[in-house]
Amino acid sequence: MVDFDRLVNAAVVATFGELAAVTPTAGSPFNLAGDFHQGGEHAEPGTEVPVSAAAPTFHYRRADLPSGVEIGQGSGLVIRGTAYLVADDDEDDSGFVTLELDLDR
Image (cartoon, rainbow, N blue to C red; front, side, top):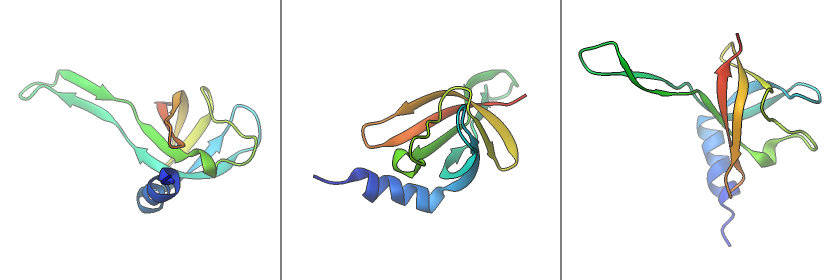
């Protein structure tokens, strides 16, 4: 069986990844490499009315987490100098986790 996490997910993080400073809801802060997507709004052409929006997301390999640590709703991340809170998390079958982020205001 092909190890998708090692062959694909690891390559994505190695190629596009950047470090996030993570503060889990329980445990000590640590740095984690992952693929960050800033998100944003898209407006109707010729107007300034938003027709769709995408939340910022951070994608990482479950295998890269320190032992016993969980990142879930309410955990904090600082990426590119901006602070975010985890709004939702979703893990796929390959071991890649997607965090949906909100600005930490």
